[in-house]
Length: 238
Image (cartoon, rainbow, N blue to C red; front, side):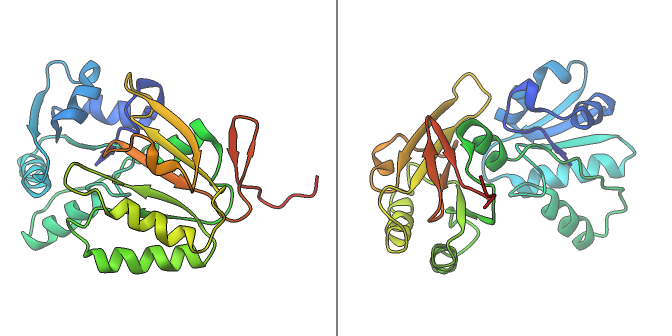
């Protein structure tokens, strides 16, 4: 299970590069395989599209069970909204005898935070707004709790062509607990040629272009702008 980071070559770990290089088979979502094509020459590639995670994971486990060294790649980190948990569950459910190693990667939240400044310096939460696997009412309860607890938050999967109201509802929830000038950062396709990073605020950020390749960072009540940067102070005396 290999995390390839947000997409750019410079944000891969050495361990991830070594794992992919040492593998004879590389499995992944088609877009992610395209991001590592410089590492996959001469290897067997198994690609599939969106919503094919179970099939993709099963193909990787079956190939490993046959004695191959396999890299199943995830963007970011495989243990954070990635495929690691599914691999363990599927291997156990189907009694597969395979050795699974998790190779961590640079997370989307961390990569976005680095582009924006230092917005996640103290306690924060990560919440996915996708209700494909988690009921929206459960997600909404988590948003309410995080907003009330004054935690900064990284919102994954904020908006898609079919999901346009969830981010608006999340914004409404946070506006009940935070000032309208609370910094909000939107980072899209970080470290790729399509990268776009915008610093806005809680009152206006919905006016920005936000999609499935974006991550939205909302500050807590102490977050502020320092010049062009989004900073959440840790509490040092200066």
